[in-house]
Image (cartoon, rainbow, N blue to C red):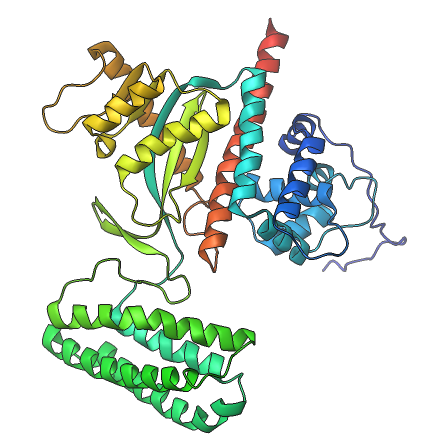
Length: 449
């Protein structure tokens, strides 16, 4: 039997490492114009009128944002990588320092940038790719996709149950006039819990479930009215819990009639609220096999010549039609590259005679928006086949950013603003990795020649 024998000398925790120049993070570090990126981040911070105080350490924090873009990870994972992984420290310009970042700083900085700031960083990467010669701005193929939220399936019973839980949690942190009703709140929450349990375990069939659902509805409606009356007494709530309680009551003002509409008719109300804490999410009807509805936000994704991606939301990502996304794709492209694409493709969801006319009026030479029915294409048969082939590659790009590597889909986000920056960060990571691969490929070809 072997016995472990410790080393005679204490093992050092200080390591000297030489990085390979071909490592992806090293190539990315050397490719990005960090001065320009820092100026952009400073401008965003000034625009948002952030509170006075010490300036963020922009260079390491921007490196951490780039690190999180290249591979899906939590903020604590990013903290650990920056502290102990040499290529990550190189990306954050911390190789000659023993200082490191913490996960709170990385989160706060990402929140400060927001989806708009990350989109502007992505624009810089796209312009860099164009300057090097890897991006062809004359070709644009676009499509829409759903960014699904990480939320439970929205049922009427589940939403009403969640409302009572959240109200109890928020009211439990308040004093004053709320002390008198706390015992009543507990009784109402207990009643709802028992009814929800009956609905899940004992109500069999549509009729029984509907009967229990109506009981829950009337209990929650009375509960909601009590809270509303209490808030209407005129006392201003300034605490975080008080504001959350007011927000929940306002959301339920809209949601309760929608729930009653479903219980009465069996049909979902128009623009139904599907989540209490992210009330601006909505159900996107996709008609896919096995997934007819997706719950989240609708994005437009454009694939620019060379395979790079650009993503955008219409307004707040709510209820925009594909026809609107179709024209917005051209406008976003023109905003970034100061020119319209020579060739543009979109699926039949964006087709209308007006869109064809407007695209041509903007200067697009080959408008390949797939027509509906037997309407002829606005391009020749040769160009039609070419556009169909190129437009199919948009789906591949969308599938890649939705993969587990980038995390565009079902991000670990607690707000729609966080979903926005997670989506833009996934697209940014895709473009940065593609740019570094293209650069390595071109250097390899040059060396072979």
